[in-house]
Length: 211
Ligand SMILES: O=C(O)[C@H](O)COP(=O)(O)O
Image 1: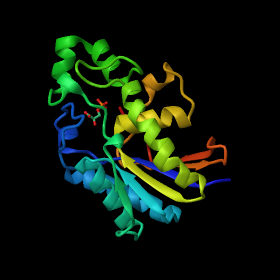
Image 2: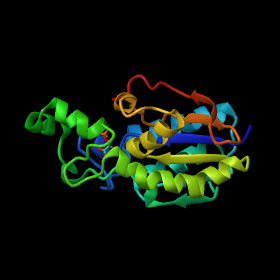
Image 3: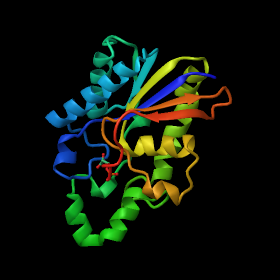
């Protein structure tokens, strides 16, 4: 058995609440988002984990979530690395548009393909594969070695940068990843084997409402 990798999607952001495509734009958490991050942190405190290092993106909603989780587990000053490799997928021309307006303009099916498919990018933005092309190397060079050395590692990031990681960890196909939705503030605890495959996965909360 090797180390532990905990993935958590940031709590609800102001633009999640307004139902806007966000991508690399940088809104803060809402009050509910703060609560969700605290709840996720409390679940990890109850689980009894102490982290060795935390990773987050260059965007404030993930950074605040990371800090709220660390506060909840009593590790407010833990070493934290920020990198834009973990940023949300770039939503390109959709950034700032209302998701329901986009469905009216381009149709439900097309918007679902842009949001959830593996390799169809939104106009001017990144597909999940493009997002993975920056998330996966960063995971291999900066995150995985820490886990394989037996450490407990927190990653607080975004819906689609984490979908790229979960796709690999859970060995999902391009078809299966279409149905992968991650809830805000719900920690996923992976224990990895020394060959970097998954020994166990526990979800500390309810993923069923994710969309
Ligand atoms: O960037 C965004 O709009 C959200 O963080 C994720 O959006 P999605 O669930 O539409 O991919």
